[in-house]
Amino acid sequence: VILIRFARMEGHISETSLQASLFTKLSLFIIIQIFFVSAITGSILGVLEELKDDAINVIVNLLAGSLPDQATYFMQYVIIQTTLGTALELLRIMPLIESSIRSRTGPNLTQKERDSVWMGLHPVSSPKEFDYATFLSERILYFMVVFVYNPLSPVTCFIVAINFLISTAVYRHQFIFIYPPTNDTGGKLFPTAMNFLLSSIVIAQITIWGVLGLKKGAAQLPFMVLLMFMTLLFGVYIGQQHFKVAEYLPSTECALVDKQNSSRLVSLEFLKDMYLQPSLKCKTLYPNNLSKETFMDTLLKYETNEPSKY
Image 1: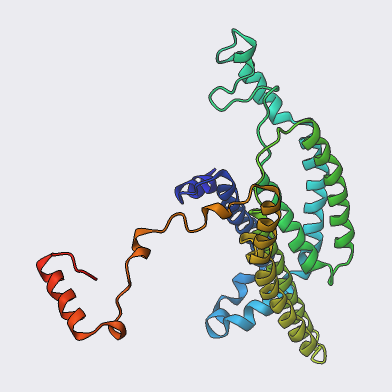
Image 2: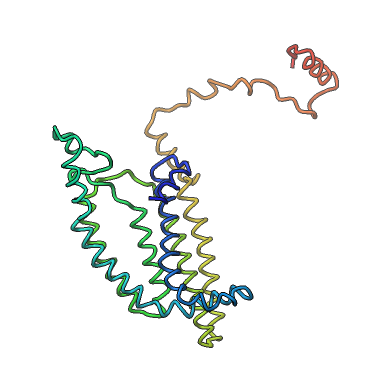
């Protein structure tokens, strides 16, 4: 609720932009609060003094030492979300409670009034729209868990895969039968999700780098540096090759669309040169095409506010 209020204060002009902003804030909050805080809180108190001297190495070593010990915790977290979360989604307990309150309060004289939303309370016949920002931010956390813990605890990959399989079946049912259709978001959430995924990969590589350093794996460290460089290079590549193309239609595509439209519509050649802007009808005067007499005449007319013959 607080984050959505902050997002509304930013002045977004569409609901899609608002959801994209909320998605960014929720993802950052969940990653920091659930992932990093739970993994580092138990170990950070003993290294506060060392942080003042060499913060970067201490943080890397802290991640490398504390994150592997948290693999069981995050596997249990994903299992609980898979079982309890999907069960609550199918049973829809909270919407049923809300609709029960709505049926006993507000205007209920006609069927139209009974199906309407009153004071934020939705009846069963008018469910809320799907909250994409909250749903996707939780999935970003799952990807973070997979990328970080899969090299350290491979069973994590299978648990998250089971979560995605069950979630696919459950939410396919919900989208078909429960949630009302919404407007197309235009892919506003996709660039943010991709940036979070690339950041998750980089964090996982930094963690593996720290683990190899603690395990005295000096021979593998140069390959991790190369892998991290390739990941960052891929992030730059996809930002240039996809995001800009998705935001602005390429000129080649524009020309193709114009060519297709020109063959379908009536020819507009008769409109050529039919209208010329007044500013284009006047000769543009530059210093290199002005004689001394023309320049003096123009300057004199300008100072006396009289129209010049040029």
